[in-house]
Image (cartoon, rainbow, N blue to C red):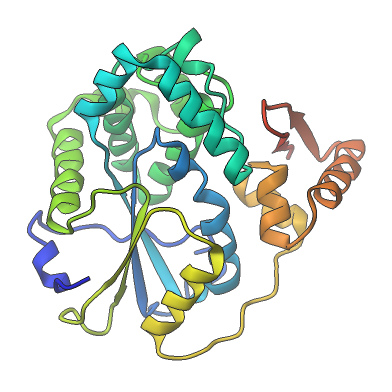
Length: 300
């Protein structure tokens, strides 16, 4: 990027969200901050999740993640009304290309009527804590991409909030509140100021120097590209951390796809499926069949 980081702090204080493995690597100030610009209903943004999981597993000790909820809401609303078959084809093509299952039949059978409500709900959840917002985001995406639920329906949104353990009364109060709206507007403003027009996009910053240029990666890329950028920002070539034991990984993320497991652990899909079947026999996980591959829910 050609712009300096201090140009992008005009919305007031922005909370920094630790990467998902923060419980393992939260004992020192991490040198890199990654702004992750996502449209929660974009299939390519959904397909970024395995990459972020693997990056966090191997290099999470070096960075924090700041999710930014962004989308071309007016465009998506128009497409949802006029071109459900096009949206279905886009989702199906993305699922086949990336390996991350998403069911495009949603747009024909149960279309999302007001995408902005889903984005607002994510910001409302985030008012209960950074981790709460991140977990709710993933659950909302699962509801849309796996279960074909209309995540602009308030009953579906509240059900997702209940499943991730949010304070429901507080969440309902916050859903259409000024605070949630301001938080979403701040994310959208940040998106414009960083000249982000492709989702997903990641912007890497060195936290030691607020005036240093960030590096922006627009679109979805191969894993090694993100590793190279991280190493460039760090100006060093650190070794990746060892992978977590599979059950610990599953316990942390709760619901993961066979493809995600294979990607993170560098396994074939067949090996990942076999390992999950073993855990299913031990009643450690429950299989969630999906249109383009299985997902698995960890059982406590």
